Image (cartoon, rainbow, N blue to C red):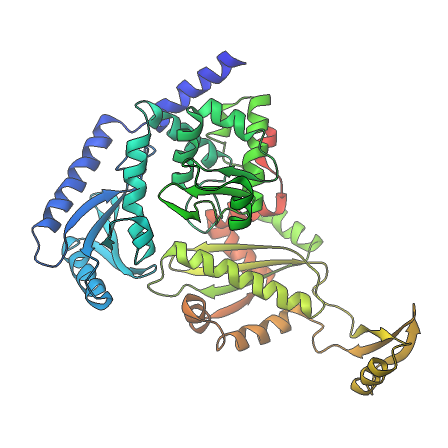
Length: 463
C-alpha cells in the first residue's frame, strides 16, 4: 500500500508542478506589471504579488496573478478607491479588462494568457488594524513563506490537487470549499500530504487547528462554533475555514478514508463522468418534480460574490416555498458567467391540495381558543378537536409552485439588494421542460452539473 501511494504521489507531482517555462513566464509578467505600477504617480507605497503564486504553492496551469497595490492607512476611502481603479486601468491599457466588485471595486482582466487582478489595499502594521478584508492577504503570504519548509511546497500542491479532485477545493463561494490557505496551514501543521490525509481520516464532528495556540479548546469552540475551526495565525479572531460547509468538511474526511483504503490517482484527477444523453434526461424529468428558475447575470459583479448571493437567494426562495406548503427535497445553483443564474428546486409535488390544515391551541386553553376561532371564521372544514387541539382547514393561496415562484420573483425584485436585485431586474424566467432540454443540449457545463445532481452520488466511492 505504501509503495502504491508513493507511485501515485510521484505521478501527481509530475502533473501539478509548474514547469520552469511556466514559472519564468509568471515571474516575468508579474515583475513587469509591478515595475510599471511603481513608476506611476500616486499615493501608493508599493505593489506586490500575493497569493499562491507568490509563495510557490500554485498548481500547474494556475495562471492567476493577484497584484496588490498598497496605500497608506491615512488615505481616505474615496481617494483609495479612485486611485486604485486608475492604476488598474492604466495597467490594462491595450488589454481586455473589466471593473469588478468585492468589498471595494478593483480592475481585473487578461494579459498574455494570465488572469490578472490589480487590487488596492491598505498597508497596515498588523492584521488587527485592517481597514478592508484584503489588507490581511499580505500577512498570510508572509506567514506561509516564513513557516513553510523547503520541499513542503510540493506537499501543499498534492493536498490542493486531492481536494480539487474530490471537489472540495476553492476559495470561491460556489462550493463553500477549502481555500488554498487552509491547505497550506494543514501542511505546516502535519508536515506532509500523507500525514495530513492520515490525520484528516481520523477527524471527528469538530476539529480545531490553531498553529499559534491562540485559544484553549473550549475558548475556540465558544468563539467560532463550527465543524472546522482553523484559527488564522495572523488574526486570532478569524476562522479561516468559516465559509466551509458541513458537507464539504464531511466529504474531505470521507474521501481521505476512501483513499487510504483504496489509493487511486483518480482521487486527484477524476475521469470526467459521462453526461446523460438528452433522451435519458427527458425520461428522468418525467419521474421527478424539478423546477428551475433562470435569472439574468448582472453586469460588473465578480463571479465569486455572485455565487454567494445566488446561494443565499436560493435558500430564501426554498424557505418561502416551504412556508407555502411545498416540500422542497433539494436545491442547487448553477451559474454561466456573464449570462445566466439558475436555481433548481426539487420538490415532492409541484401542485398541492387546496386545503391547508392548521393546528391551533389546546381546547382547554379558553383564552387562546377564543382568539384562534375568531381569527378563522370561514374555514373550508372544521373547526374540530384532534388530540386535544383545535384543528381546521383553510384555503391555500398557492397550489402551483410555478405560479408561486412567478409572484415571489416579482415581489423580490423590490426587496433584494446588490447583485441579485440587478439580476432580477435583468430578466427572470421559470424554465419549462423544453427550456431545460434546450440549455442541456447546447451547454456542456450544464450537462455535467445536471447529470451529477440527478445521479446524486459521491464519485470517489467508485475509484
